[in-house]
Picture 1 (tube, one colour):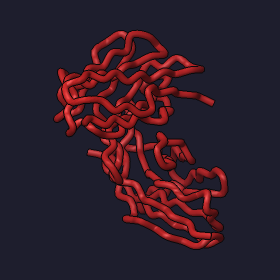
Picture 2 (cartoon, each protein chain N blue to C red):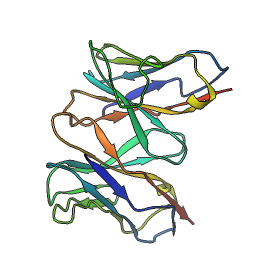
Picture 3 (tube, one colour):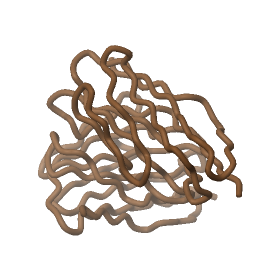
Picture 4 (cartoon, rainbow over the protein chains, first blue to last red):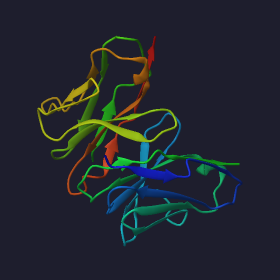
Length: 115
Length: 113
């Protein structure tokens, strides 16, 4: 089946640090990748949709300068949380789709803790 | 816009009990419907799906039937196990960007031995 790898799985860092999270589709080419944020005991909130080779589309209320997304290849998208603060602490999950019309496959998530 | 409403949890059952988690949706067209499962500290795994009315999705003993007349996609399992303890999300996708999903709030299931 389709496998999506997310790295790192857990990161703890100091306030003001920038953190990069990688999302890789291991056995298929993903034209579209999605980035979600999940607060404890809550549902997934879509942050942005990223299409290979073009700029990401951000959902309303998500700061694109804060959450930088790069989808430079068909197997890799990255989310960089710039100058992270404690309120950015959350569980971030990516998913990948062969194209925008295909079901998405999820990574295992990254738990980000900002001290 | 689209929305998904799930039965509020948490749900606690004894092993071998019957499970139902209700899910209803609102969509402008003809969505595809999904159930995902999330184990602690992990991402989401697709449990089952149905792409058109009256379709039944099934996997690992779980079933859900796409009911257009009641806009529902309730998840059922005849006999739950402790290993089924997880958070379950109902979701839909619609239109040209079918990869983009709308999720329900999730229902936490705890199965006790």
